[in-house]
Image (cartoon, rainbow, N blue to C red; front, side):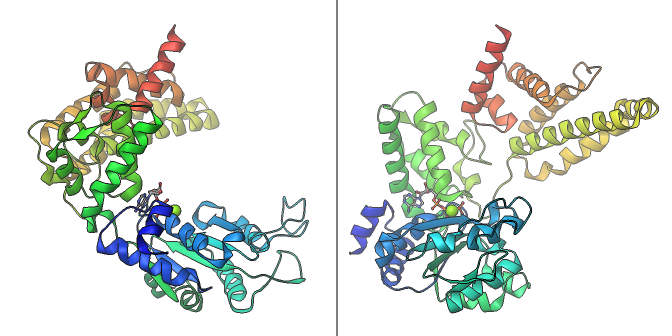
Length: 410
Ligand SMILES: Nc1ncnc2c1ncn2[C@@H]1O[C@H](COP(=O)(O)OP(=O)(O)OP(=O)(O)O)[C@@H](O)[C@H]1O
Ligand SMILES: [Mg+2]
């Protein structure tokens, strides 16, 4: 299959040298049984590439099993991969097959391999070298014929250097390394991928076609895309769902890009940065959440320690210096905030929230959330866009929450 056919079949869009190189590698390795290590930031398409490798290989009739090492509790990874005998660990009420049995004749995609505990690394190395393994809690040696495709968004070489990843396993896995460059290093792919996502989304939501202005494309192409293609897809979806009208200009796109100033006078230039820009609204939300958690902890402490403590904590809570401690936290983020004006705006909002009628008892998180949403809507005079940005949630989420609020009040 030539490069174009591979791209068409797996929906891998892009004509940049970076993507062409990736596809050529996929074509070369697919027919072999060699282990492949896919490196790339979050959202660049590592899983997509792993699927293509499996589907283009002789193993396509076997299973492709995916396991995200970073998402599974450490204690369960081994039984997940190698299976377990009954009673092998607490909660193992039945014997179970692991992925190495289920994917026999197929492929296992080990996502976030850098997160794999050292003990599991030893077992994995053994399967790779000898094709044998034991279920957890069993002495029976089993055979399996599995091809490994691993992925990491870390630099696994560095992990080896730091002693967190076994060198012998690294060499086993990295016979072939496929590096998928981040979107910001292949800006020419942004437009075609975005167009494809917009098209797919308008089809899905039966929404009218969208036409972007040249400035809108320029903004997309200059943005740093910390979340890569996944983020690009989210932005396309949001435009289709939330933007009314067919014409889309840069101002309509700006609110959906993290760390990019909104407003008429802002330029696209602020978006061109190589390191992720912390979003002020997001930070604010984190601070709120921390505050709420602190309050919750105080409530728990009160209940635990009784009334003597209650008095003291309550006094502290209303003392000015206690507030200052929290203020310091938010001011530490000042250098990352986009504009002094915006900062003042957000600060006064934070202050309103903070200094609002102090409830006698600590609200539940749900109540606090409702209150926060109402305050944000009030502060931004009903602008859902600004309120959502300040709360660090999407407009769609805010919309849903508001509806719920209305339902509850009705
Ligand atoms: N070149 C591309 N063309 C079209 N869609 C793409 C491309 N690259 C990635 N995608 C899409 O972007 C999304 C993210 O891709 P994928 O899940 O493969 O990323 P990932 O590198 O595995 O991310 P993570 O590290 O977060 O697991 C998916 O919906 C995928 O289909
Ligand atoms: Mg992935």
